[in-house]
Image 1 (cartoon, one colour):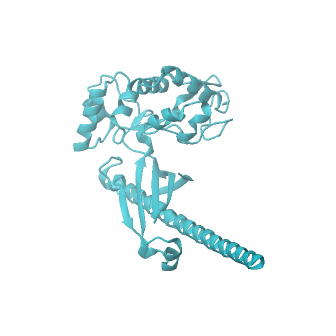
Image 2 (tube, one colour):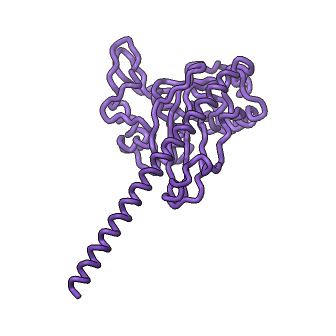
Length: 303
């Protein structure tokens, strides 16, 4: 009886190990397959942005929320593009792809927060004022803003006198994504609140008034109230802004909007792709840069 029990135990153990290895192999194959699908989705998004730039010669060099790239892709069935045996092994009946392209310049770029004076990095007063207005409107503590912006300044690489700060050079503990602002002591609850309004880009960029939310416009334009920003958003939905002069007239501003701080076109875009294979989900976020017809991927990360 003892021998039979021992043999049964060993057989059950071997069977479990074999089942476990098959599960691991199936998961690895599904992950690899999903990764290639998401790479294809990213290439498709880059093609859309390239075609949008190609049509700019006809429609004018502007980017707005009425263009094809701004339309999100709802879950679309992709099982016909995947191998039937892989689907069977993964236990999934169907595969679905969804995604979206978001104008990264519709948010406040934290790279603009640091400027260089006499070879020393300092916080930019206009950028700091924008964040202060945003914090106040979102009911976040002002002391928190002072703490993490000071840490952000300390994390920047020191620039040489007479040159601008090298924003694309990572200093000590310098975050690369908004989610990494926790390194500077920013609570995760505040990051979740701010991430729809701020971003981190490789260089200084203007805010696109055609795509920015009313909250971002209110925080970024000096002397503007939230009601005026909301009115601009409503007016541009009927007819996209063609120039900064048109935006200035809509806002009834006496001073001109600086092209260094504001624009009606964009260079950086965030591409989000999500693949659902049964109960298994993979999601990726990518940052792409577009210069004329050249659309490059800056980074990709699994979210």
